Image (cartoon, rainbow, N blue to C red):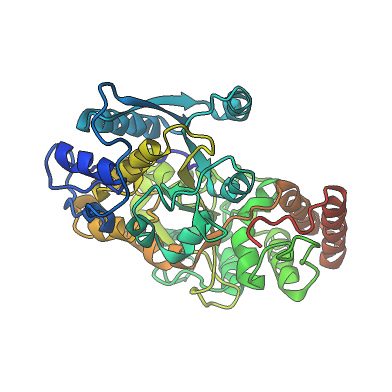
Length: 475
């Protein structure tokens, strides 16, 4: 999920000579501090891929072309700051070398599918495209996107965190390069209200039982103790982290042959939501969608479970209350916060499966996402550090960046949530929607056993009707 209200940071870029070398070896561009973005305060340390050697694969052409190779790049429209970031660095790339020209098109999300299908049918698909993690495996399986192993420096993939590298891996090959990750579940709480309720503001709840108990204690004088998703479809995706936490897996067997939810682990997830809702600690009607932290920001709830993107919303819209806000990992079923408490959504760049200039396309991806860490720090700064890096070298560079190094919320999520997070499911949304309606039913009074049995039947019927068994592209 692309965050709301996210903004990002500041970077230096590689010198023209280094970039041309990077293009020539199809590796990732490094930085020597030349042509730096004047607003950057980052250290400018280079990623592992910045030192691509001349022994790497051959250049897109043996000599500089008389005219730049033009490569189409379609990006989905997100926040205005994200659009501006893409435009800025496309322009910098185009100025930095004389071999490749990237032509950027920003496509509104509601028009994306139709526009992409039409372009593919006409043989005019963009050579570079944005794609979210959940779509990478299926796009790779159907040949819509191209493996990057022979197009990018291997060091670029070594720079990814292990759990995130798996998000773009299909059959042992890499089919996209990550731009960002966003944890789906983080706990936001009011330190002042904790103190008023006799709770330690420096010790947020770490177990589901503590979370429910604290929520009851914090419910007082028109302020609810806890807000989270409480209706379909939000319950379908916002609960993925809790499903992993309790069961160690999501709703289907690995071969997608049947539902795997009629067990004690999933019953504990349903029981959590049912207890939270029926205890009165949650409002009877949702005060806002799950992705919106408005109710917390307006002081109507003392704790809210929301994604990392809420940091941007708090910093932009509710600045006056920031000193009262605590941020913590989502509670775990048993208090072990080295278990998964959130899934990671996010976006990548991929090369079209029928690209005419795959090396040139990959050279831009190497430059933008896998090269000089300062380019990505520029993005994360404008996102108010509400989105997070998939690269170790970028996080290392942030430790010496003036703004990033002093951001305690960024450090907490980067160190205590993301390393243990897992990918969103790649099976059809219908499965998660069936689960979301079942959880909502249990919250409103249906027994947990009956709600799970109904969801199990609905999911198994969907699998049979759509011949889903055995089609997991990553199995």
